[in-house]
Image 1: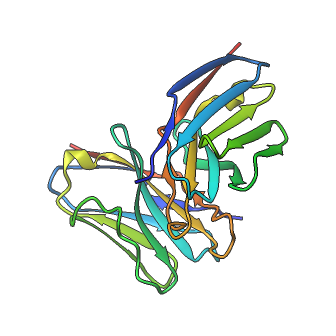
Image 2 (image 1 turned 180 degrees about the vertical axis):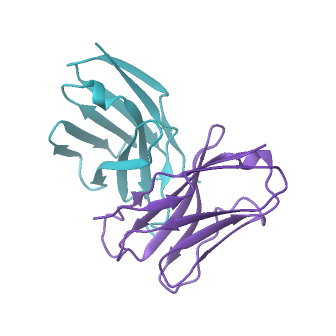
Image 3 (image 1 turned 120 degrees about the horizontal axis):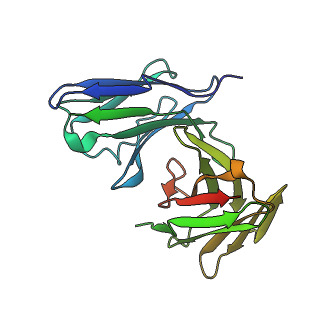
Length: 115
Length: 112
């Protein structure tokens, strides 16, 4: 079946502009995660959605970052007033909670470059 | 907080075994995972081990867990050029199962 998809695959933006990154999880997966992969910081957790529960936003690096998940499916990560340090690959993953292994399936990522 | 560490680079010859090591600090880790990332691609879950196990074998992959030393390893038998990638170990803990803590990644280079 279809895996996790993300769009765009690449995004170049000017410093100060807002960007939106999209994630479409695997059908039936109720949990959705955003991670960031950058040279200096490795792989970092950003935010987690599970069903109708309040999201776990503990990994968001600043208030310029926000995410929403509409209808329990597609998620959008928004970065306002982008800075050069936001340049990274943003990865989305989904899983089926209740499975003890918490296996997360990752999308191909969106490479964001802030110039 | 949790910390997961790996060596940055490993080079092996095709046909040899590769052993990628990982250490973690969170003694409450419940599951430990190995992910593979090929160039330009996302993360692929290779295998995982529950913390009450000390070994898991899956075809060419063997995972060893020393919980006392908080040491995890991934052995790839008969390493092939297609195994060249970055390998990440990750852990999840009770109550934080919503997020994975990743290691820094080990780049495996397979030479002919």
